[in-house]
Image 1: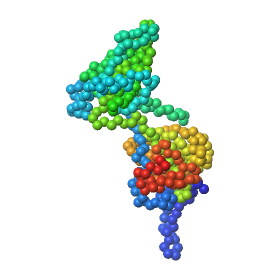
Image 2: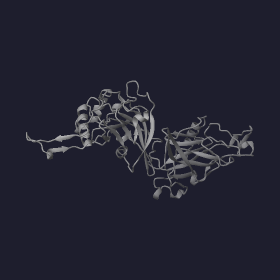
Image 3: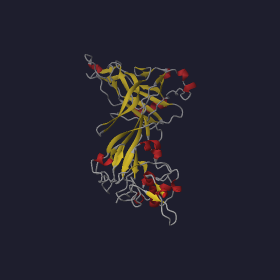
Image 4: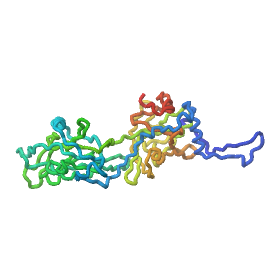
Length: 441
């Protein structure tokens, strides 16, 4: 059988010598304790290790992301340059002026036609927006006329970003939502604050937009972010829309050259930008273990990241495989049901068939608060039921044998009935030395 079947009631009868056992000689052992004791023994036997070999092992939990997408509510645009560089703004000295060499390098990057859209390269929260360049106000209008000086970009916006996740019925849709964050004193294609700078606090550099001076309140998201000589710059491609009854020269189509207005993003001293997005990690689990020859860690495989949004905590999951044949639930969702197969059918674990069925995304609401991966993963209710009806929660703790572990999402799982130590020979070395990246074999 794929897994060791545990007895419904485990009783250890302790008798001394050859004397008869009395009722007070019988000790009952908690089923979960028995399961854990058996798992420890079989784990050690399967991999030829002992507890001292993996004391304090993190089992990859140090790479599990917990992402705070709580919407920022205390945004500030500070234009008081006499405050910068001192007091509470000590980490934000006024940026140095743009040099002629810097301007030449920036214009050389932005002068050529670019793509339709670009992705952000950094996500700073506190930063200066610094004026770099304003292009000549000369555009081709819809009527074919050259429009000079009559229209300009107006009102620059960076953004506050928050994430909204929609899960119904089992479809996965994750959308970034943006709330415009006005950069004070940015009008007519110029930043007129203190020496062309505005300090944005509790904001974001993940999205940018502008309005047109004659295009009504229409917002345009035509921007391009580039890293040049270690600094980050955003260039804008001008466009405008014709209002009802207005002249044709209000309709200006974009030319995909992002040099109509260019600004520089200047973070505070010592600021390290967080990544724009955080990748999920892959969790591989052994449902009941206990079979020395069958530690394949493919009984359930899923990719996960934990999300905090205010006081709400969720686990964002993509189910990849179900190699067990026992009922196993994650947050109350039975994994075989999610794949729409019977419980005794193994999914995506046979050699050459790891992606036979499409992955299934779903989410689980968790009881917070928690601020580390250990609390998060153990707050995720993962239960397996053995043939006798007993239900056991899978957990993971530092220094204990791994009922599950985390690896990069690029890691493939073991084939069915192939111990992970044979599919990945250095896995055993990783048990003794957590710095070994066995998944890169």
